Image 1 (cartoon, rainbow, N blue to C red):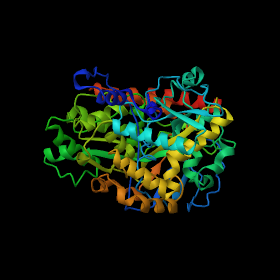
Image 2: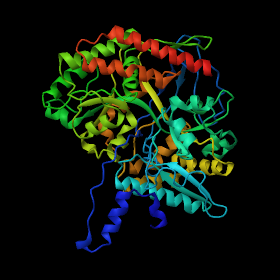
Image 3: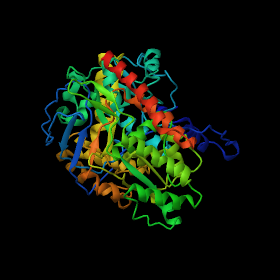
Image 4: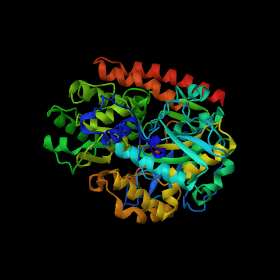
Length: 552
């Protein structure tokens, strides 16, 4: 195997080998299908003013680092809903990954098996070996090739560092075992919601001494950096990608087939219901809903926020209380119940998670579903979606306190890494995730590489650094944007007026897990008792919240 080929998946290596063989000797055994799940990013010509309501910040004060580049107005009224922040931001077109690195996933790509090239792996004299999360399993060969090109370029610029990409998907339930068993990569991705738990458990490395080595002297947007900070103010995880707001994704082809106008997507929940019924008449599911592996609770929280409710409140003393049985959550479940049992517009699959619902949507089986606006890249990379069929619009908002759930991805480093590996990891994170924001050459190179490998350039995300930085970056990559922006104006023209709300701050994944069975029951049992289901879920969530706050 050539050195640069160690980052390529087995399928692509076989194809290269076969291409060199005489035709009669070519035989490619059937490969098992890959399954995986990512996330991702976009924007260009819109510059909205965003209000980010930190619905219930963690029960401690996080020192905010000075950001000389970010012009953010922050107000912090005391209320049971936590901190409300008014943020003047820009959205921008982003060249997907620093040349494909931005496959919004918590898992990766490579021909490497678990454990190979791990932190303990010896390298050449004086050389540091670094294992990193790459693309999701199942990504296209073009995406894998793009990642391999990125690694080769990084190694050429940093001859003392050897990078090996590996398959790794973040799961809260298996992280501790991965860490203890040595199968965790040196650099890995985690959701915003899990950063503080890992910091409190001392399971990720403190990177504070390296903060000035990141672009713009580490002048990150404090409103995203806070998710990677500990109570001591130190930075443990770096805002990396997929800073998202949830939108309504729809299949333009199915809209047309159902006699609907794909340029006029629904703007209210009543219109979503009406359009879903029309699409269901074509034989496809009009509306699909996630319900499995924590995604049911995640999307039910999205629906709750859109109707003005909250899953947790935090009092002035920092004590969190579960409020899963609020009126907005009940209304959201009753709405799903109507679509499922009255309209029969949700198809026949009710156990979708993030990966499987993306597959179904890309395959033309779902007319509409809700997810982060950044999912476009994954739909193209991992699910081979035809961009022409894709549409994105705002999730309908109802009520004075309604808003859009927002989140993102942090890059973290294993607590077991040596100082040399931490220093190498900082260089990789700066290059792979953030380099395009700091250099026109890097931005243009990444965009051209993405185009050469038929990968998306221009998926929306919030600013990791400053408004001015994104304005500059927007100009650098504008000629290379290849996503269907005209199909996304229902989202991009309106997101600036919406309030972005953080995910529930305490025991987030436990709260979501408690809600999964509720969503599943509503979709599979015509007589599901919503009140009783939410009472049980709220009790379970409160226990998890109490454990988390006691431990901290």
